[in-house]
Amino acid sequence: QVQLVESGGGLVQPGGSLRLSCAASGSIFHISAMRWYRQSPGKQRELVAIITSGGSTSYDESVRGRFTISGDNAKHTVTLQMNSLKVEDTAVYYCYARVATVVGDVNDYWGQGTQVIVSS
Image 1 (cartoon, rainbow, N blue to C red):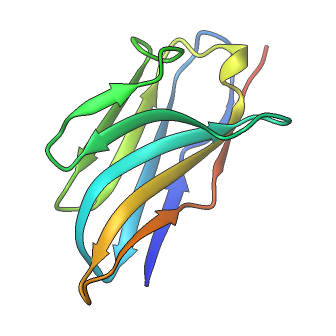
Image 2 (cartoon, rainbow, N blue to C red; image 1 turned 135 degrees about the vertical axis):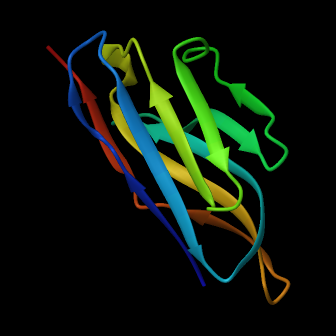
């Protein structure tokens, strides 16, 4: 079994910064990619950023230049540094990982979500 635990959400004023973290634990053999998604009330979950095990990154256009995703393969962690936050960044942020387990399965795992509120 694999668990993803997020932390770092909260309330911040527009223009401020937050750092989200996600740690994967359990029967992990290899994580091929980790992603951050977000979901606002009444909207579908959307992809925010991706990082592969090779370190390649990509971002949704709405956050490019403001958010930075980074990861540590050895520790199975991923962070999302969010700068210049806007009201429209308000959402529940979810960590995702595609994990190959030690018994040979490949599954998708999600964290429980962490709330980010950008408001004055």
